[in-house]
Image (cartoon, helix red, strand yellow):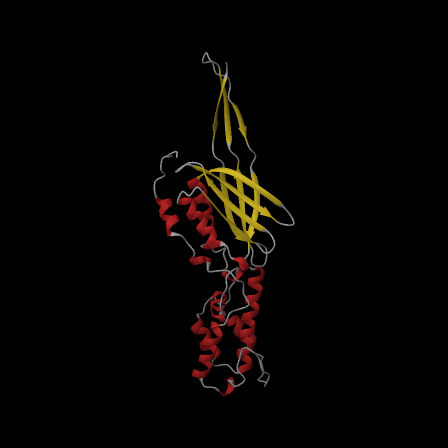
Length: 291
């Protein structure tokens, strides 16, 4: 009687994070390279026939995260749980309308597991389940995150909750906050206000959709060249600014730099990493051991 022997190789996942075209969304592009199964019929007499190769098609899809419900800390905890060989773990996130979910179910200790990615929005709804090598899955998802936030492509103004001081520092190419303050304190109230408004307009344009650009301080100083003094009140500069000495003006600027800018709501992704995952990935891959 013929017998069928089969070999199934785990799926392969590829991942890449990047900013969406506008606003604070961060896209996660995923490519699922399907598993390959080789089926071989063997006769009792030991005669083999040509193996049959079954390969699932490659699937590409995208989910995204919003800074309003920053989920990246839970994303890292989820990957940490996988490295700890928990039997099953999951996390969900809300993306200002759509709902996403990642679920992991281990097969054996130090072996493969099953990753399910679910997405539910008014445009599309899907659920993809894949059998993956544990190390390859964690390494790909974690390194995709760290590669993105460490790269020139990542712009904190497109996602993070920032102060005015932090934002000003990001758009000045040749000056520090101290340089900026030293420039402003020597201006009259209207010139200082105009300078700050020019900075704010650049921040707003960049944080809405990019591109990630910065300018020398002289670029903003030119905006004040034709400003005439007036008595008009503005939120940037105290009405008494023109009567203050340098120290009083500097104190107000320090306070202004600490104000929250009209930015997004996400955490500082640049500082978000996991020593647990990085140490685990640096270890030699263990030999599979069944429960």
